[in-house]
Image 1 (cartoon, rainbow, N blue to C red):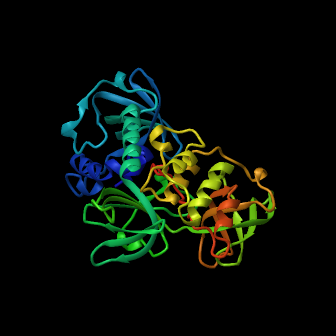
Image 2 (cartoon, rainbow, N blue to C red):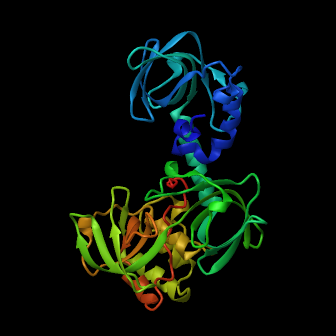
Image 3 (cartoon, rainbow, N blue to C red):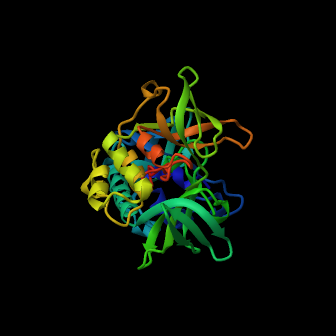
Amino acid sequence: MFKITQFFGAAVLGAVISPMVALFACCGVSVAQTPTASAPAAARQIGTVKAVAGGSLTLTTDAGQEVVVSVADGARVLQLAPGSTDLKTAQTIGLADIAVGDRVLVSGKAADGAGFTASRVILMKSSDIAQKHEAEQGDWQKRGTGGIVNSVDAGSGAITVSVGAKKLIVNTSSTTKFRRYAGDSVKFEDAKPGTLAQIQVGDQLRVRGAKSDDGSSIQAEEIVSGSFKNVAGLISSIDAAKGTVTLKDLATKKTVTVLITDNSSLKALPPQAAARFAARAKGGASDAGEESHAASQTSGSPAERTGGQGRSAGADLSQLVSRLPNQTVADLKTGDAVMIVASQPDSTSSTITCVTLLSGVEPILAATPSGGPALTLSPWSLGGGDAGAQ
């Protein structure tokens, strides 16, 4: 069976994976569900529509290939809404209803060269995907939170997470969707289906679901986790040619080499915001109005800019960072104070790979000079799909 993620992409992964499993079972797309053991599986192509002309479509497949699809006479052309569970909910449309940018799955047989003849076309409109993505982001903003994993109880399925200075119990069930990041990417489309067993103490975790009335626990509908390192300190050297920076981690007192890649996100915190987050790191010296002002230093929707009471400083910091302008290695200087979220290729490697680097954090580090920063930087934004959401 092909990967569901390849059809729908990042925009609706979290919302449609389970329903689409049921859909493809209904459609008989899986080789295991063909009518007879000897019957060959139908060929498939999955991708984004690049052009529509007459009775044919030009697709850019998820493998990066360009395929011309001839739609056979009498072929079924079906449109599905995000979240649909089977073809009974599909709407029969014409080929002319397919537009550039739409996502399609075509079934049929390969022709000579790069051609393909389709007997069925299953379509998801790009506008529907975008709308679903927006709704998902809103739900992550409203009902999502995250922090560092303190413990995992495999028997009960409960995960204890530190959210700032507070502890949150994350209760999982058989319906909880797990996704897991790996490598140096926190793009939501790069996260793979995961399990509770993969989550370890020290992991960073984001969860979406219904919180208890007292806010001490949350019933998890979806969890995205990853194993990331938080390091902070002053840059001691920069090698622009190799794309590396070196610093002494305040927490471990060890020298760390950090590799900057094309996937790394480099940001700079505005001075006023840094001062306010530093006050919070010292022990909550800022009030709700100051929190809101710190989070409003960059552009964003009113809902995104609100700090508000009851939010963790780390959550507000990560939310703010996601909207800051991008920087490059050339913008960094020796002596800059930085906070970094990174991944480590393996336990024997002496180099970690940067996911997010935040400079301009001198006040935050100065607030707790002996034990490292009191705030941890999340590798993904509150949208969860940028995480994209992450």
